[in-house]
Image: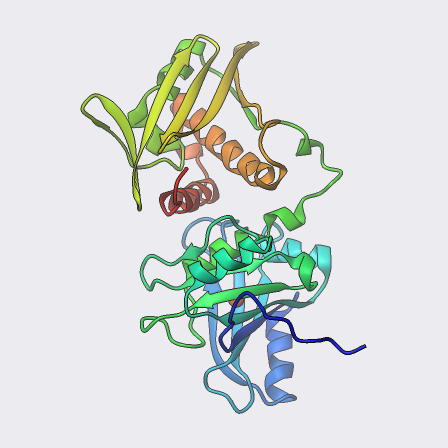
Length: 330
Ligand SMILES: [Fe+2]
């Protein structure tokens, strides 16, 4: 039976681009150019977080569709074994990864989709701070590929992309690469620090240290109270230190969110961990990754070895900062 047209809750604009994930982007791009008549637009290299700053782990051949100078196809290849798109290709094989449609107002569109229960791969819309380009992926389960919503503006032409968004979008794929047999799934993020409880507590309870090891980079004291500055206004922050842990509580308009980090002694040092068992499954995987990264950085700082902090850990924390900063509410 034919489908009957329903009133859709949103209005998509034109098709914008689609992206393939492959293991040899050059070869696939060449086939499209030499056999199918696509035209090369450019090659764009991105650091999506698995390599040090200044290096690249994502190669994109961007091609104009035949007969178009506005619509492109992106052929993407992960360049390192750890890179998100190499892992994605390994897990799902080559093929269409996502199809993007322009929208006039991505915030409104997303709100309407969410009212209909449509899920996305990230909680927040990814926004490039320079161009203002906004993008988000709808979850893959609806179509077998990701549908991307993209809001362009006069600063970002059709066929153009920015590295920050590409990298941030790439990293929203992490959940899809979760190994259901992996041991760490049920575990809480934790780290061993070869220092005394007192020394660890001192760093963890110090608000001026937070920007160095967490995504909370804009914490300051106003009239004796701690606040975290966000794009849409200040949020109150309270840090409570106890002999066996530190509680961080954010509050805003009557809502509170608390993260407790537990400290226990172990051999010649301590273990810092966070119990995520009460976190919604949706957020758990991501929070696990972020907090694990933060704890690694904390360990390096407390042990006085900041050079042990990897570029990819710094990148993860910087992206997390951006995401928190743009969050409405807690
Ligand atoms: Fe895209």
